[in-house]
Image 1 (cartoon, helix red, strand yellow):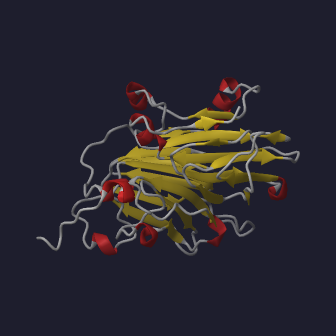
Image 2 (image 1 turned 30 degrees about the horizontal axis):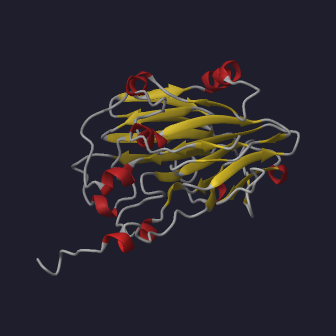
Length: 317
C-alpha cells in the first residue's frame, strides 16, 4: 500500500504540467471507409479513445460498393468491448450528415436523415447506420459521410456506464437550421449564429444541444472579420460549407496586443468536410476576406462546463 499512495508539496504541484490539447486538422476525404476516430489517448495517458479530455470525434464513410452500413454498440453485454472500434460508452451522441442519405435505427426507432441535418441521441444499446444513397451508373457520388461526436471519454474517465436516457432523440432538419439562422441572428452582432437547444436542456438552463454538448450553427458572411474570443472548453470545429478556402480561415493564438489583435497567430484555412481543434484558453477569430458564404459547426463540451459555471467565455470588444 505504501508504494501506491503518494503526496506532493502544494505550491510546486498544484498546477501539474499536463500535456496541452493539440492544434489538429482532419478531413473526411483522408479517412478510410467505416469509422475513423480522432484519438489522442496516448497524449492524455489513458487507455480509451479520446479527442479531447471529454469528447471523442470521428468521421464515418459508407459506400455501397465498399462498406454500406455500420453498427455501434453501447450495450453492457457487448463482448470484447476493449478491442472493439464500435463500442461507444457515451451519454450524448451527435451526428452531422455531411453528404448523402441514411437510415439510422436506434434500438426500436428508425430515422431517415439527409445532407445538412443533425441528429442527437442519448444512451442506446444498438445504433445502426445504413447508406441509402441510390447506386447510379452515371453518378459515382453514392457515398455517405457523417461527422460523429460523443462524450465517451468523460464517461470512461469516471469509470462509469450510462443507464438512463437524459434527453430525447431529435433531428434538426436543414430547413429548421437555416430558417432559425435567418430569423434569430442579429446582423449587427460579431457573429451570425444560433445555439441549438431542446426542452430538456432548457429545464437545466444551459441553452445547449445536450446536457454535455454545445453546438453553434454559424454563418460566416463575405468580408467578415470577427473579433477574437476564447473559452475554457475545447472546440471541435466542423467546416460544413466552404468554396473559397484560401480566403476563409481561423486565426488562433495565446495573446492579444493593445488593439485586440491576436499576436503571432496560427492560421487554419477552412476546408469543406474538415474539422479542426481549437484548444481551451486560446484566442481565436473566424475570418472571411472573400465573396462567398461559409458555414461552420463548432461542437464543444461547453454544456458540461456551463452547468459547472467554469466555461469562462471572453469576447474581445
